[in-house]
Image (cartoon, rainbow, N blue to C red; front, side):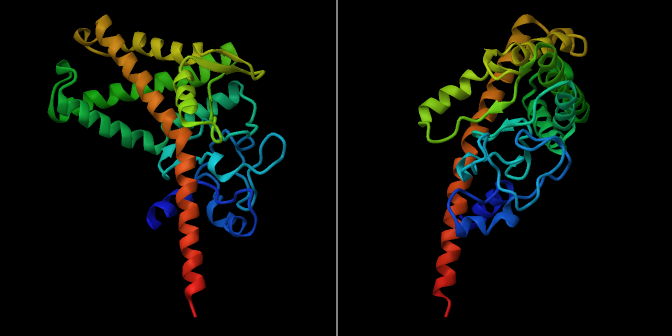
Length: 273
């Protein structure tokens, strides 16, 4: 588990509200993002100092198990997630567009796009798109348009026009797991206004619907029936729910293994002559 803790530690700042041992690891774990992508917990596009402790809206240190990393497992982008209790930068046309750009063109996007395209080609999800290299190409560029359309519509255009904050605000501990699971599912239908009150997630759901409508112009007609588009919409919602569940519970798992790894290191140091 030491390797798991090390991997988790590279994503999640390793300082909690307890004192000495966890504070000493600040420089090692509180690394700034690899790019200048604005994050939900940062201020604008300026990376935080490595030794700075993340704080909530009241200026209190955010517990380790409630801190969202910029990337999950060092790979999956997590730019649009807000740590529990944190006060994120205010959304707006410029901020939302910048985040959407980083989300759409992040290197991990192309890794997952390649994997999903290979899977779709292998399962022959849309026979009209073909098989082999040509089929893989056909799935890949269409999949890229699907993803970027949804990102810009949901995270920028509709969100900015309707003044909806579609970032994921993690509920976190000490809430019970069933409560958090229901919260994850509910975020598909509920967003926040710029003022912080809850509102129907028109930007999020509307972006998914418009993405399917637009896709009719670049998919073969045999793959754009109502049933086919409804199935793609359903898969899109399920993927979002699954990723939101990862964002919600990953900090708890990472914090557990970080502390476990530290305890092991401390025991080893104490056993040294």
